[in-house]
Length: 71
Length: 141
Image (cartoon, rainbow over all chains, first blue to last red; front, side, top):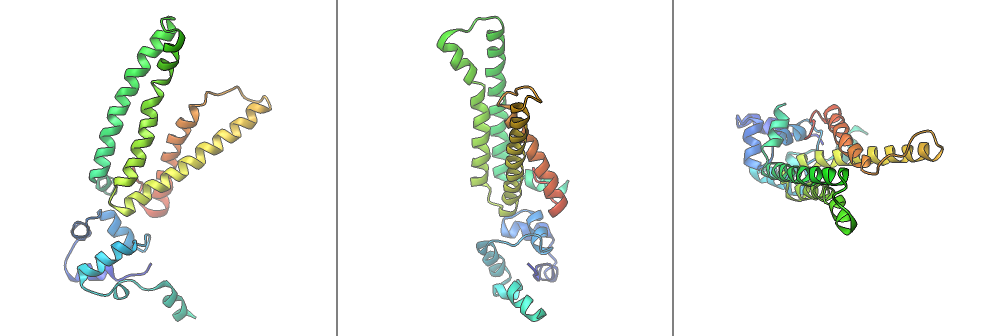
């Protein structure tokens, strides 16, 4: 799933390791989410949103909205 | 390599590793006396059944440890990698058993001991790790 996680992390000067520690997941999990190879579960998506103090839809791009825009 | 080290650092993975080490030691401790005893015809009767089954128990324990690991692993992505590896392992082992079964049935190969399915399953875990590496960039365990 397309997302702004890398951008939000870069704005705070956090490494993937830093973000992983804050979310209690591995660095490779962060990398997989950032590159869109893995879609986080709803609980993890909420944890990410709460950490950045943003609504989930401001971080993750809805696949259905993305495809409707393409149409 | 860094990804693999990340995985090795998860507490659940460390606990799993310790369980597997102890179970492997138990396997050797049960297997060696059983092989010696059967080879020298020291084990007979109902004791023979118990001694023959004992080495299988730590292997079953390793399967249980893997299940426990999936329950305990808090990192959902790492857990997914392991699940994918297990699915590959199961598919590979069952496919091998099916093919071998037909070859055996038609008299093209000799009869194989059932525990080779377990060996194929663990080999399949490695195939799953390669698949993870190729598709996600993370090899898993």
